[in-house]
Every structure is written in C-alpha cells, then in structure tokens.
Length: 305
Image 1 (tube, helix red, strand yellow):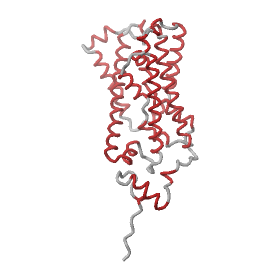
Image 2 (image 1 turned 45 degrees about the vertical axis):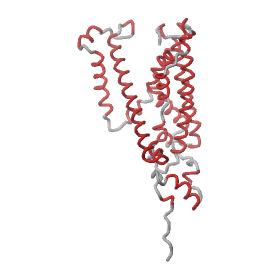
Image 3 (image 1 turned 60 degrees about the horizontal axis):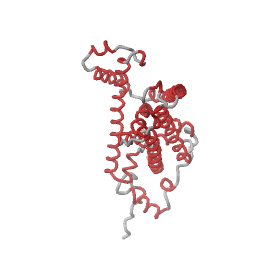
Image 4 (image 1 turned 90 degrees about the vertical axis):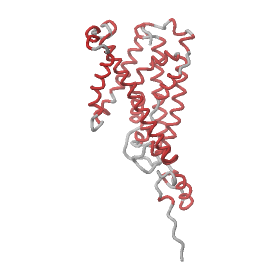
C-alpha cells in the first residue's frame, strides 16, 4: 500500500506560529525557495513615488510632538537633547527597517506588524505587539488631550500681551476648576471627529501640519535673529541634565512601526523603501533638533522654552 502523501509544508498558513519556521525550511527543500520569502516584492506599475512616501512619513511621524521639543531640550539640556535625539532616531530607523523588510514579505496584503509578530513569535508575540501598539496610542491620546486642555485654558486666561484673550476673571468664575472645564470642552469637540466612519477627511487635512511646521520654523528663526544668543545658553545646566522622561518622549516621537507596513505597501518602487525610510527619519530628526535647539539657544521673544 502506498504511503499517504505528506502535505506540502508551504500550504500551511504563514501566520500559524507552529508552521511559520517550518514553511521556510521544508518548503525550500522541497521545491526551491519561495518567491515571497527570498525575493523582494517586484516593483509596482502604479503607486506613490518616493517624494510622496517621504512626505507622508515625515508628516505622520512628526505630528504634534514638534510642539514639546523646546521643553524637552530645555529639561535635558540642548546638547544632551541633541545626542539623545540622534540616538533614538538611529535605533528607531533600524528597528522600523527590520519590521518593514520582513513585513513586506507576508503574503497577506492586509497584514500588520502584529501579524508579523504572530508569524515569528506566535500568539504571545501577537498579543504583546497589539498591547504595546494600543498602549502607545492610548498614551499619546491622553498626552494630547492634556496638552490641548492646557493650551485652551492658557489661551483664555493669559493677557493680550501674552497672546491670550484676557478672559481670566470670566473664565475662572464659571467653575472652581477651569482646567477641568477646558478638558471637558476639548473632549466634546473631538468626540464627533473620532466618531467619523471614514478618516478620509482627516487624512486630507493632515497635510496642513507641514504648513504649520514652516510657520513655526519661520517664527523661531525670526525671533532668534531678533533676540540673539541667550546668555545662559552655554551654561553647564543648559547643556546637559539627564532625564529619563525626555528619553522616553524622544523614543516615542520616532515611533511609526505600527503603520509603516501599510504606508509602504503603496510604494511604486519597493526597492527604494530603505532609502525613503532613512530620508524620512533624517527630515524628522532635523526638524526636531532645529526647533528644540534654536528655541533654547535663542528663546522666542526672550521667553524660556
């Protein structure tokens, strides 16, 4: 009696943790290397060019984190902040490149970084990656909510000379906890936007961030020229002050691993993915450093960062 034919190892799902490694070994031994496992994806005839991908990565990765860079560089010292920014950018670019390299080889066109972790580390890796991604998004949402609430409160309370509306007496008379009221107002304004069925509108508005970036850079540059170098900018305390909080903020500010695979699936030339990723990280690093260092060397309007 002939022996039953063994199933082809490559027929097992790639995302099954028990078969993920076996597919790469037994499959190649049986009929040669799999194109998805050993070759880079072929260039697409249609898709986003290199400039468009770099722009999307730059704008998405940077986001509102740019606004806290002056404070981060002041807390850590602008020189140590510069070193930490370069270090975090290098580590993040390398790890994101690894995720992108292996993620683009998954056969599922909808696969994400959690599926990649499932393929190599099993369901525990999938769960840990999903938990970390949700945790990063939740932490960023909480931080941004607090920042918007503080900004709204300062806008209403600060005098006109400070750039506010000068409504301190009227605003504080509404509630004994005006900051809490500001937080509730921000939540009420953002809840409808978070409930949209499609994010297409917000995606189109995402490009406004670059215009705001150039406006901020122009303001900082003009103010730096007008005010000159601050006398305390070269003091030892202004150069380096170790801060784990700043290190954590900078590490998260370069985090784009969760959506890198999705963004690069639209690449017209996948062979240029590594180059485009490096260019995007270089632009983000340059942006962070230019804002953080210049705001501390030449504080805008003479105010500390």
